[in-house]
Image: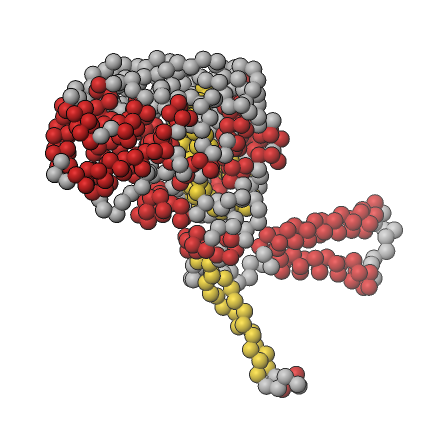
Length: 603
């Protein structure tokens, strides 16, 4: 019998004993006190009838509460968190009422309440991750169709009140539709939607290049996400050519659209490109041109192959929609932490693969800007925390240095919330070593039902072994005559997985397995947002952003102009949102990313 069932039955027996006592006091002892001489003593049969139920109840209570033989941990000590252990887990275990009271009080006094990610109920407690726990990064393993968006992502966004800035990777368009109205009450909102230029803000990757390191990072990102070759030459040569072209444009045409880079790489003859680089105002570009083109002139076939490869790699960027949304720039990533900001990257699933190079560059440059800003800020931490909601993480392509970022940024006020469908996606995108690094650095991991064999085997082993009791039966002699047979029972212990692979795969809908760093695992019961009236009221709030757009050109040595919004997606309509409550931001000098390697003068 389970421990919880024994406890409940013991409570019931205790209630019955108290009920018996109340009846006996009323029927037997009170009359005796009122008239001691007029009450006849009970006969033997009457005493038996009166006290036999009490004896049976006391015996049953003793059996239920007797500890009996306790299971040891000789074969494994794995177990789910107990109520006593929850008390030592800090802010992890709370209550709905307490969280609602905290949010209500903060909004009443005009300060943004802290962001909490509610995971579900466990032992009548609410399990919720505070901002500090999220900075240790959150990993969601959720096969398609199990509700990770409705159970975790959307509820988390609807509980953002402007205490930190956000980036949201929206692969279906539903996150913009569902949450931008709520977020706009507390954040300035932006949407980069390269497949819908009428409603998208503009983003020009060239504008975010300030030195040679930035140019090299952009080149690496573009080449890695347009096909990697097994022969390193066919990766390194295109990267060198792209980086040199970016350096040339930033020094000679600082306002060039991204399409200008594509035109040079895809439409310029080799000799014309060499002449262009030799006339460049960047000494570094001239130096590269002398060496690079000098080698290519010795092998015309090799030179032709490289130029053909440029065309095949970057043909996708000739799309008119992409050219329009990258023709100018509205975004300054380093200033997103000065004011509460929510930035959506909205790319439909069927276009995600084609636009992987653009989305990867977008996220890579934003991460790089955040790290640089944190490095130059007091305490080497962002003045306002920043969280990346990376739903369908692997659909964004290969983000250069991501495995390094996830290992180092937790102390800088940067949090990652990653969602993938299976380990194969991580392996295909970042390799086996990258997969292990990402998993090792996400100290909170949430597993949904329906995962595959590889994933369930991994987490079954991660849960560990527990010790269970066993009972064996043996019988000797003839089974036809009871007197001739001897039946014996033997009790022992053995080990088993705390949860087997099949038990993990077949968890009930709404049941989530939660690993949190050094804590014991939890099986929480999660509710989707549409079953929560409070959250449902925050969905699809009408939203109308500012009607104009200002081109922003970030300059390393001086603060950029303020960012102004653009018309919202077609699904978001309504009145102008109220200004968000903001917490005081310490006065710090603007970030200065310029250094001795800068290749052009500030504008």
